[in-house]
Image (cartoon, rainbow, N blue to C red; front, side, top):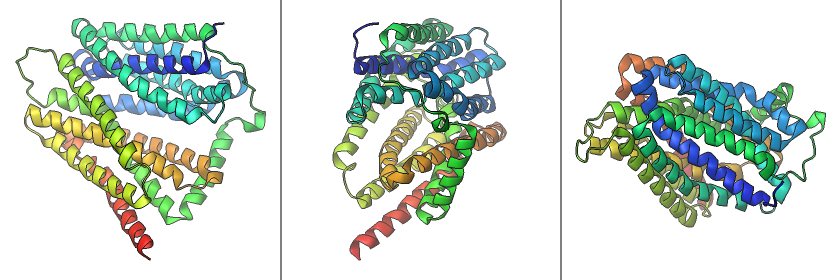
Length: 409
């Protein structure tokens, strides 16, 4: 066992995870379309399988972290995730892609909750939020290195990117056996562990709380709408950029290089916009935050339509960047504000329910929008998600007006 602190191991693990994940995300759609030959509905189905696996595996895999070891759960996640990502490129056929998404989905459930719970056990709750935010900031910049690496490796041999990424995750998982301290872990009592029965009780309790107040019912509608639109945003954004536009011939770069440069630009814009929001909006009143959310969601909806129907590569890239930055800004401003609106005694219950409602929305969207996109084409399929994003815009605007009226009275 090494003498590395829990914070150091946390930062290093976050960096490895985001380095590999962002590199794989860069080449994934190109591999799925150009090598495997997947259609829009198959791309969306892959994402639906992934989220569905997480939805159903979250509880049983959580038993490992609750009853045996947070550290063991994290190690299993990295090793299993490495195997899942690497096997995706073993045989370029659709069913292998689906199977790899099942394995990677299971691996994510071993990481979900266990990693942050381990950190809280080791460093205490007082320094937890600051440490996690610092880890997120560091990993955002490290992610750029992953994109750059995937640009060059993927341009030469795209399948090699998956093998290297998978090997890196699995190797780091094995290294955590000796690097990762676990000194303050206490197994949860049987009645405190997450079970399907407990999840059902949580959902019923949350639903009763939500339906008792119009505010929370409206937020529930927002979450479902975001969930329904998510399969298209996650799986068809890169596909639309790759398939629907005539790419420049000068400079003579491969699509992976172009997409890498565009992705780096998006990451840098995300960091800059988020810093501006933290300094100028995050600590303001609810009225200011809601007004900003309205503006962001107007840009969000407009950007989706711009990206869907743009005819030139330049406007397509502009739409791509605006969609990514507005989505990132929206969630980073919306989530902390939402948490503050929920009283602490029911916060975990209600947030758990909203997480499940987003997942259910994703499963609904994944099962319907893929077929719809195959029927109407990727432009109209992409544009159709505006129908599920508009409720958020309208609800935020209603809340803004109510907040202003309350402040004036």
